[in-house]
Length: 197
View 1 (cartoon, rainbow, N blue to C red):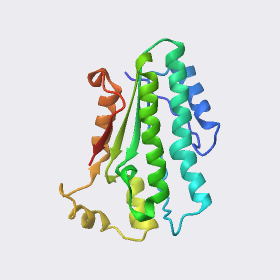
View 2: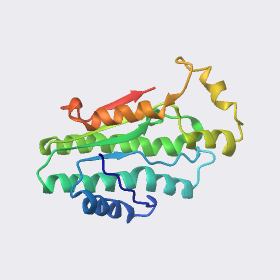
View 3: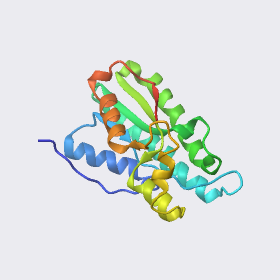
View 4: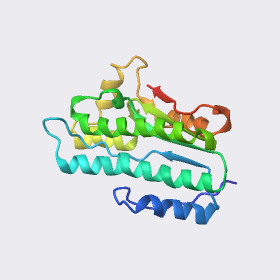
């Protein structure tokens, strides 16, 4: 039976990565893998973006991910043990929609950090890969589109009709890819940024 533990932390808080890593090591004794899946998608374009939105998005989407990676890498290296890190990025890292300029910049930063870590720590047997997620049907996305952006409950079927597959990516499909990248079946892949759309 798998052991599961939950640590509630606000990734906008600079102390959160160390808190999470400390709790993981206390509970399990080590860190074998990390998936950076949390992120904010607040809108901010070159016309509407603010310093507050910039700081909030970079704090959660880039800074927290960097320091969580740092904590995992430090633990793996201290034990001279292999490990795997998967960063959840976005297709928006390639350019992004106009209203997602700041969000796209955070994902572009994380893409660079993914490849940098992969290059720096391949000799440590630590693999680091990223998934550039396409539009994914998550609860937070449904809430963003239907409530915050005011598109109502029919937004998903409208957008799905425009997509080649006829639907958005399912969260469980992204999860399966993350599990594959964490596991030994994906060895020696490292530094890959997989467009998943």
